[in-house]
Length: 399
Ligand code: NAD
Ligand code: MG
Image (tube, rainbow, N blue to C red):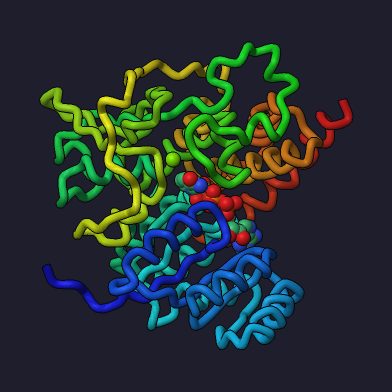
């Protein structure tokens, strides 16, 4: 088999959970991949370790203080990585001509502009940062088309759907005989918790996911199931499937990562151990296949694969996400921003778990609807939603 020349990789959000999984896969294939740039928010010590290990050309920190700290650490270790700072530098490394592949693994809205910069530069973009697509779906997909970027989903469900669709699929479900997308969900840590107990659950309870070890924001999103709501919107944009043809199926074992239901009654699923190195390895090497370090699925060790309907009363965030998708325009950006603020307040113990959905609902009610055709409109909707959400959080945190 021919091995392609070494591909230069940028990891936006290298110090996070996805960043660690991506670096693990890359380390296994030093002949194929080299690390060109790594970025982090404020954890200079961790990024310094990664720079010493992978010797990227560039490292980017969110602000000048963190960047100065990183420079000092690298100087002491005689590391030659060039350190940059700020949101603009994130966009610059994402569109560097020498970079071939950009792994978008920043959490939240902060990832939108650098991910879009990579898309506009026509890169191969491995998308983990679902919030970017939720906020600016139309704009994002238009940019993919006009720059002829190669957008590959890393979110395990969307990567599974991508694998279950025909190779020449082009966002037209009817033409491909696709009847439904079946998005699987573990149901999170509170799938069976008595409703009354949800009033008093803590950030630690919410972050103790039964299957996946992830960053804190997505862990809370999994507990409220807003993660699945965001994923419905993500699937809509990635695969051109209307909301009514995207169904959520609860599957607590997280072995089936999602399915495509075809007109003839065939259902094609992708299965595997729940480990993000699988979708990352798939997307890195696509259309080839490489090892991910994940062990083979042991069918005799799986007691059962079970499937249930989601409980929309227990998880109001699901209906809020469908509502925002149906409303279109700036509504998904509003939903995302209100959710980010509410999750932050919950993690800071300023807001109860069950108030998260209430804050998002109230924000969606009050925010003026506008279009989302340009980045300025999306960022404006995001900022306005954060203001409204903070007012709603304050009302509830005093109680
Ligand atoms: P994480 O919190 O572990 O890591 C986030 C990364 O983003 C870190 O490197 C952090 O330094 C960086 N970052 C955070 N805020 C930033 C800012 N304002 N500016 C610049 N950088 C910033 O999160 P994660 O679990 O790795 O998730 C990353 C993304 O991938 C999220 O969008 C999440 O929804 C998605 N995702 C994660 C998983 C998973 O298993 N962890 C699965 C599917 C999708
Ligand atoms: Mg997912």
